[in-house]
Image (cartoon, rainbow, N blue to C red):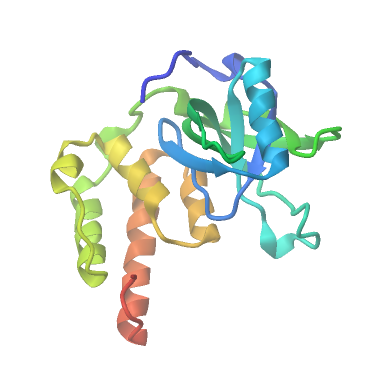
Length: 224
């Protein structure tokens, strides 16, 4: 989805951003993530992002394995900032919005705030390639990725829009499949932190093949 602001590098993004911890949520650069916002603290976060004009929210997973406080879990060190590109009021107090991914970030520190939601000082420099669309597409083994996808769909009796997949550039294909994948928080974090598009595709193929092998040996039923 096109957006109204061009982000050419880390200097175009704020050093301090609001963060939305959400297990299993994976946002990647130029990917779209729908969100249903209903908690008062996150409604306030959206209001503030709009009021301040940057329209940015950092999506990040809580590191549940190392957390002792469910209300304020430890955060993974890498997330992805997205811009609010669609927003609708549901009429019952909720916001229905869509984020478009801009760049991954590394958390430098969580800062003290008076808001109910959390803010972090972040660094985008380790992910400077995120600002270049379709970077590294030619290195992706598209056929291996599609082969793994076909096997996954067949094992789980699922169907997809193959015409849309065939027409998708490698970056859009890899990132969309990663974001929609049904894998757990650890796998989603590995996909997020992949150093480049080729590596992300390889991780996606590997976790898909492991999932298929596990189901085959355990006799687990396909996904419903």
